[in-house]
Length: 133
Image (cartoon, rainbow, N blue to C red; front, side):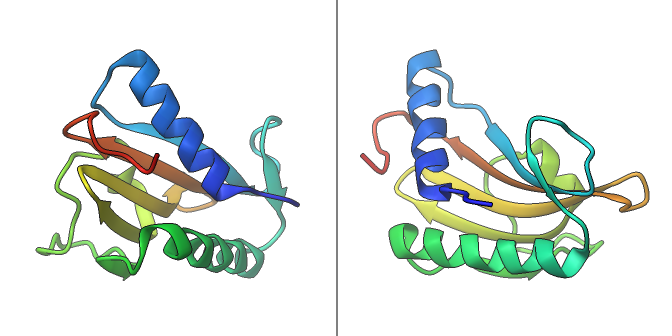
């Protein structure tokens, strides 16, 4: 499975600029089990978490050190993204960066009592003027 998370990030930024939207854009990258035919899948949680860690390292090479990396607790803390991310509510594990006016989340989300887990990347920004270009 060859994922290019940096290229995916740039595609999200280009899409955001093209659509002139400052809202959330996200892409599902990998699922635990064959839930969606259009994305790759793994067969166990350990594989999913290894891919997550690999993609996190790639993003750190471009975005720097994250503001937060870890499990999402049931209780909100001060360590949560500034912007609203719909899928963040289902996040089991996430990494969050701020880069200029851009917020980036890499997360594993859990659905259907966590039997459906998805690895996704999401971006949101307040302004279209600053990006990774």
